[in-house]
Length: 394
Image (tube, rainbow, N blue to C red):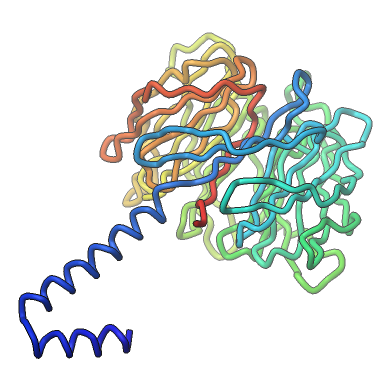
């Protein structure tokens, strides 16, 4: 900056026109750099590997056009279904989703943010069956998984080299609920922190409960149950995934069995129920199964996918002034069994992965209305389960 100031001072003495030209060129170059820096992202996709040897896939995503270009894939990693990315994007962690054999695991990879390649580091068992969701603590010290079949939460430390350490803590849930087919026992389905990173929450489909655990970073077993911050969900709903708003004073819970979004106010460490709203129309008689829930980056709209024979993504407007959701509309996802989806960082596109039709469809998003239009871009890929993005670093 000192060099620039001296240069401008020198030019000013010579020619006012050159001063203006220099400034315009300098600003233009900065704007161009910013645009390029925010245009491209790595899309990292977690999948099931029953029909393929490849597991994690990486594609370069163009946020201006919606185009996807293959970059890399892992081989021989079983069922890397759900994943999370470290804050510095140097590491990727995924669950290796198993069945009832309790051989579920977490795998760690080094990630090259320039060319989108993944390098395997190690794996560690979760000691819980069917780990289906994963998250990192804000300080990046621990990994947490929700183990669906065994109804438990696993806690594993992250080593300085990015590898995963041996299991540090295993929390087993107990109980059941009213759906005899799906809720005979606990089924931990997702784990996420509140925005401040002080409390880990878990949605348990089998017990109709949101469990809360205070996080103590310096303890070998960092989670301590916090019943005050826990909450019960309406019996039979089957909570699956949830999201907080950016401010951190609202939690939106998506229940799989009834395809319902439940809004909770989160004030002074307590979850207080405010609203239930269905993804379905009043006269709905089909088979549903809500899956994923996300909020647009501008905080104005909430989206949720519905599976079964519905195969839709539903848009809700977030009415922050009156603490409610209003259904805006539903869009066919064009595939079968929409699991996860991702709203790109520019809020221009939504990418939806379909487990059964083996594809990802790209939709253009209207930022004013929240509604979606198919962008005529489709990626064929085996059993996509989880979609995440991180910027391309030149």
